[in-house]
Image (cartoon, rainbow, N blue to C red; front, side):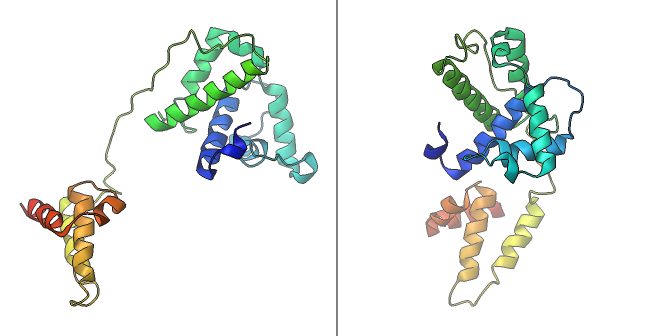
Amino acid sequence: MRWPLIAAKTRDETNDALCAITRAMLRDVRGRPSDELLWRAMRGWAFVVPRPGPRQMPTDVRLALRWVEGASRPLADLTDPAVMRSLLTALRLNQDGAVAAAETQRHKHRVLVNAVRYAVEQRKLPADPLAPIKWSVAETVDQVDPRVVANPGQARSLLCAVSYVGGYRRARGRRLVGLFAGMHYAGLRPAEAVGVSLPTACCLLRAGAR
């Protein structure tokens, strides 16, 4: 219903959320395909519009989706608070079992809310099963990965190195110093750093030197 109205990135995020919701609604039935195949079948074939016909699907994907159809809980099970609570808990986690980022949790919850409301609208559910259940984002532990964040010494070396880019007259290197200094010392996004005026950039560099 919403697919034609949403951007490509939102479609991808919605696809991912619907896969997570469906996976949480699967029962333990014999013949379960591998997690990798299930994810590939749902991500690449089940939750795209228009959905490809069975003849267009690879055999393993078609069989995996047939298993999903048989293993999925009935929609009416969502009216059981225990089932809904279990589903909401699953949406807080990534595919590897780690707690998802806060915004990822919120987006999956929004997709579930939209899907449930649409089911109520289509009279597939008698009432909103989410209404009596309180839900909040699970807190994550913010840790800086030293493998992807420059330490102070590396940052100073980077700023020194980029100052030599290009010729002196064109000042490309000096502009790059301002760009990367703003990103490192002030936590600016690239677009924000580009918009910083020269006096502000000099202040940032002096602060970094101290």
